[in-house]
Length: 105
Image 1 (spheres, helix red, strand yellow):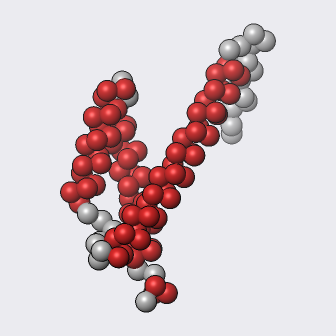
Image 2 (cartoon, helix red, strand yellow):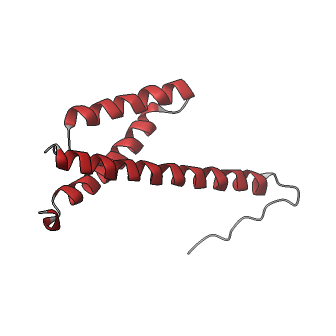
């Protein structure tokens, strides 16, 4: 059984804050789409240069960069690393699909 949604007070600042969060989410999605396009480019380069999708040293470098940047911005570095590792796994799989596409031969 679900709980009823709480009602916001008439002069709540939450709607404005939620709108700002939604706008930020839209920017984050746009940045992720840009990163995805760069990953497609990386996959084409890796295909041409006969490189694998996963390069463990690069994965660790990116994870360390995420932690360092998070610390600099006051974000929990554990959260940043977890998010980046999930994102990297997704993008490695994206590269792998390009590298293993049988139509490319």
